[in-house]
Image 1 (cartoon, chains in turn blue, yellow):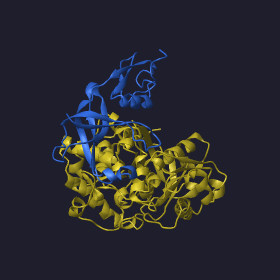
Image 2: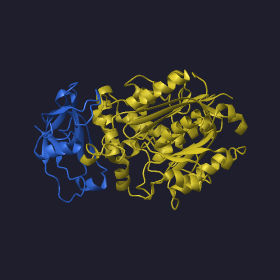
Image 3: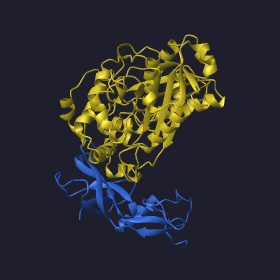
Image 4: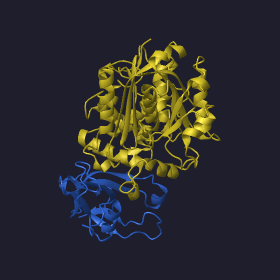
Length: 133
Length: 391
């Protein structure tokens, strides 16, 4: 057991650095948590196993952000959305490489990964986003 | 318990909402407190008030936390237990709820509840960043999803699922701006047209500048007591007969529905059940219109119409001042303004005026039952309160 990585958000992002989208599956009730969490919110179990999730999904809803926080101002306007993945899981993120006309509810997207930008002090997490399949 | 007053509101106060240059949050709060004291000459604040709860969202604005003690001091109420409540934009809805807990517990017979936020001295980018702190950091903020962005995601889903359109969203804004012209403390006191809303610059599509509530400075407060003590302070109390509060996932993406706020529905159910009031008996409501789509979703979550019919309800005109269920007669967050920590108790302030017949040009005739709906973040917290005038 001791060599299993903790079911934390930090670990989720460590897996992302390896281009893996990983969820925690409760060994007791079977609920899949994305992001992973250390306590199952359904049955209170603390026993999980890692499950790799396909980064392919369908766009549920989206918006173009025009007024951005300080850190993202240089990228605005940019698209963000919520993506429906397998197993009923959902994940929000930026959507890149699409024109405004191509951006529609229901389009198929896949995840992409990038290493963390060194300028950032905290958190030192890699980034993911979604792009056309 | 059903339909019985939980607590009585014996006074209320508010500061001017708007750009209050040169005023610190605690000074704005003192302005609201002064009005509440003035309205209630039979109250001896120093000996009567036993505790206070103050909603305040962000210490980033003024580099100032510890708002409970700070506002107690500036209100002349030093040494009483003073607690800050924080639940993003529902911070003072939660302060109100906490005040009810305190009175009902018997630990404090008279409490002051309120809220404050000083925002306008910061740039829009800074405010955008601070407000986003109400959302999930690792999966929303970290990926550039703003607070208007979250409501834009709900708006787009609502439009797709129910055919709600941008003109209907705009009608929420024009209605609340009209109401704002009748409220002397409102931040924005001008009417706007549907075209103005539709042609305003995009913030997070489909939401545009005039779909968004205002960045505002302001404070509000209420004085609550046990119903049996109310007559000591006033001849015209407003009774709170139902309270509900609920929570939901911090991340919008984790929720089953993107077109409804479960926390608001649960809070409403609790408040309705407690008060034995059904939604069709509510005469007037202040709802959390942080964005125009939020008011449409509120209509549905509170049972003023069925799911998906919110756009049509605003179109019908029934939620205007002269309609069958006037909503946001204060101007709402949209025109009165949204100093986030102050909003929940500012909604109760409007209902206090309406239910005691003091709302002047915007007075709703025969208003007896009022409801307030205060939402934190993208819906991870919601409070609903039901008020009744028994005079």
